[in-house]
Length: 208
Image (cartoon, rainbow, N blue to C red; front, side, top):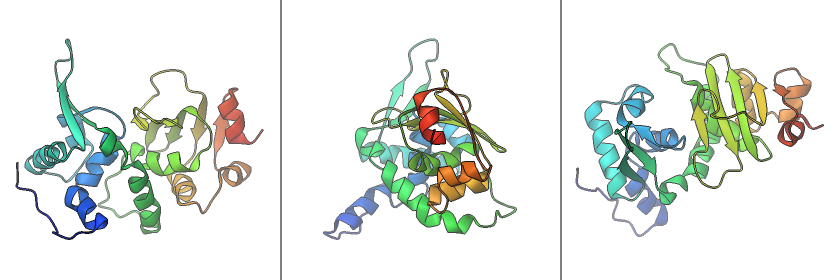
């Protein structure tokens, strides 16, 4: 484990950056907001990070109280990493950074990696109500837990149970919703989002 570096400034921003200011740390938090993850899964969804750097960051985050590591019961018997309550409190920080950085997504670079679930947290911020929502983009699928105070905020792939609502949209619309430059009702009216389902949440999302 690397020795903890500090700005040595009596400032809350500096203290926060002591814990999360290293490269990759907040992206690891982004991934773990989906719930417990194995090391191999984290490495697969963080293209560009070396195995040594990822292992070092995970150890530092555990030391700083952001994550814990535990062994799954048989037959899994694998180790997983998950956020502590303190780590999960970074959700609004990640979402605010996503809003701030959204204008930089105006053009996708040829070298850009992309995962469908990277659009989850900005969209989570834009949707009202409570419940489980399945989202389909051209890039893939993910699901959101709207209004969840504990547990995962989102998940990659299909929902683990029947969702309360299903959304279909493209990445550009998803970015605009997360940024706040487009409302959900505007997107539905323009045919950029379809919402299906008969639940209360689906009706809230459609504005029925």
